[in-house]
Image (cartoon, rainbow, N blue to C red; front, side, top):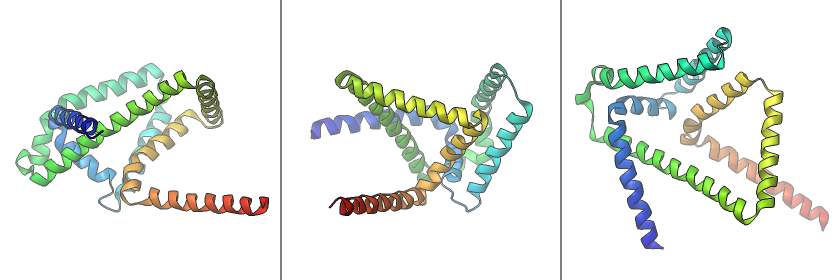
Length: 203
């Protein structure tokens, strides 16, 4: 078991090092984005929601076709890929890169690799469920997709996308400040209370 854990740790370390090397040119930008996503300043959540709102209002106003929207998005990504490595050292100053920043950059890359491993693990578990319990797999997948389809029918596509993007952008800060843990614990307490009340009634 320990040998398997060591192999897994070695693989994660190797993949983290590779990712660090690939993203080195984006290092300063990633660290700046990390500070914003973790709400290092109290006005960062408002700025995130405000920027997201402006972008989605612009999309709503322009109402581009799917092909136009996709083309513009890919074009912006290509421009960023070309300009960021060139402009980032001039804007942030490459000589200001400290040991603390390098350590944080390493942690971010490690977290990205671990997140990728978790997603792959969930996918493998889903595939295993399909092989071992096909009826349960079919029922759970169909019911989940029906629920998602119903939500999509009730809520406007763009507004739903806006809510999802806003939540994902706020998620690291919510997690960092313990807000998710706090409300999850509250929900668990309330569920336990309801279960205990039902048990007492049944008795």
